[in-house]
Amino acid sequence: MSYLRNPSFEAPDIAPWARMNQAGSVQYKIWGTGDARSGDAVLVMSTSQAEGSVAQDFTVSGPPPSVSCFAWVRSGSQQPVKGSLTIWDLSANRAVSARFTATSEWRLVTCAMDTSGTSPKQIRVEFYLQTVNRELWIDSVNAF
Image (cartoon, one colour):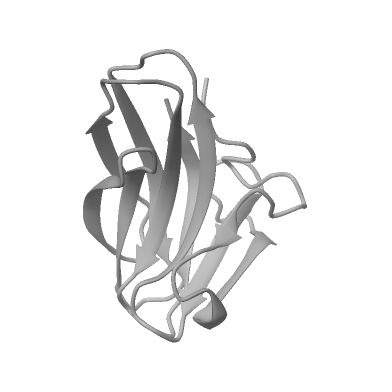
């Protein structure tokens, strides 16, 4: 079971997903589309400044040896979009990232982080965009 809430963006409320880095430059919405990877909706994000991001935080109780995340991404157009999927251990101020280039086809992105040590842990799953003024579609995000 995923630690994330609204991981496939089927709920109409975008929370608990939030703009994070370069928050003022980030646009994001849940958008209903027949082109979703699963279900009927995706998260669409774009940024006017590089490294704009959207994230969700959660707490992991117990001593999980690792946290893994996967997500499906694609460009909202025929133009490629560069970004990264990052897992943050906010308790230790550490991050692991998986960079990707999204095209017009859905692509699976995965990332994993060793989180051994004390618990509970504050974890953040974050999507950063390096490409500006182009839409990235995100669907079926899971962290476990």
